[in-house]
Structures are given as C-alpha cells and as structure tokens.
Length: 230
Image (cartoon, rainbow, N blue to C red; front, side, top):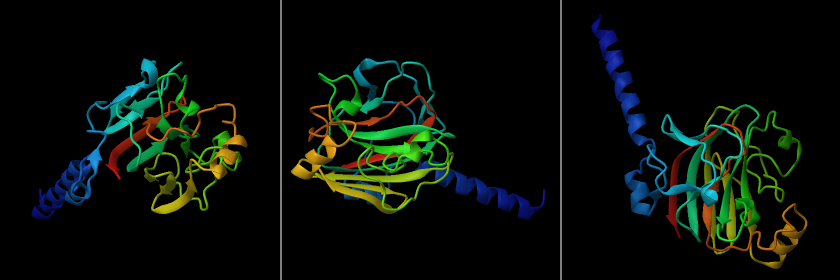
C-alpha cells in the first residue's frame, strides 16, 4: 500500500474516532455552563416507560431508538424538572411521528399528553399530520405553528433547544427559534381551551414535570440529550 493511502486512512480513522468520542458526551464548555447528560449512549439509565407500560425502546448506534410494537409506552425521565434548557437531536423514519413532551406528571394521569405540551417530531413530507398547520415538526402541537420551517428530511438528524424558564417557553429547531410563548397566564388558558386538550383539566398546568419521548408507533431516534437547570 502506498504511503499516501496509509496516511489517508489514518486521518479518516482519527476523524471518525473524534466524532464517536463526542457523541453523547459533554464538552468542557457544556460542563462549565452547567449541562448534564440525560443519556450515556449505552443504556436507558435515568429513563423509564410511563407508568411501567410496554417498553419497545432500545439503544441503537448510540441513540435511543423506538422499535415500534403494539400498545407501547412513552419514555419519561426519572427526574422532574421546572426551569431548564434541553438540548437533543432526533431523526424520524419515513412518514413517521413522535414528540418531545414536557411538564409531564405520572401519578393520577393516564397518558403523558394529559398534562404535558408537546414539541412535535414529524416527517413533514408525507405524514398526514403535516397537512395540519399546528401539527408539523417543531410546532407546539395543536396550538402554535412554527414561524419558519427548518426541519430536515426523514433520516437526517435535527437539533433541538427547548427552553422553559418561569413559564417562558422557546422551541428551537436547527438553530432557529421557531416557537415562543408564555404558559400559566390567561392567554395560555384561552389557547388550551381552543385546542384538543380542552377536556384535560390539568393540561399545561404542571410547573415541575418530567420530560417524555413519545411512542407514536413509528421508528424514531434520539441522542445527545443534555439538560441545564436554570
């Protein structure tokens, strides 16, 4: 083998090694800023299925992956959070649907969406929900649509920043702030009353709740899940 080819392979191996090492780990800057990891890339430690339902979540290529099955369950954090910034990446299968749901309370409720608002995860190209203006990727599901479409096609990774601080909420998708609103005030109450959640008395009222990854019976992946409490 020519020396140039050996050098090329060594450079490729080094670059691949560096990329792999960075996956699901905190940088020095993130540690200094107060972020902690919610996923170690190897296990579901720190997570459980909502109310101990059926678990179809696995670890696949350094990501939390849903392998769809009948009567599955949403994956929720063991810990509840109030004011925080959540960063993660997701990718969805063709025509797939999932979601990031926050402000979730388990005790006394039958589903994560009975209390928690959702940042939609969707293939906007072909899932039927993409035809509904407030059901598209990045939207505050069924209430506020994104101000710009930034979602990548199915099979590509999307970067999320979800900021919740004293009722002020921001959805960021791929570097753009796509949704912003305030919870726990009269405008919020009126918005909920016009949504599909109007019959759920405690929807959007939980100030300190768990974070959920939705099992919507479609293949989905999540990785690089990091949180900083504010």
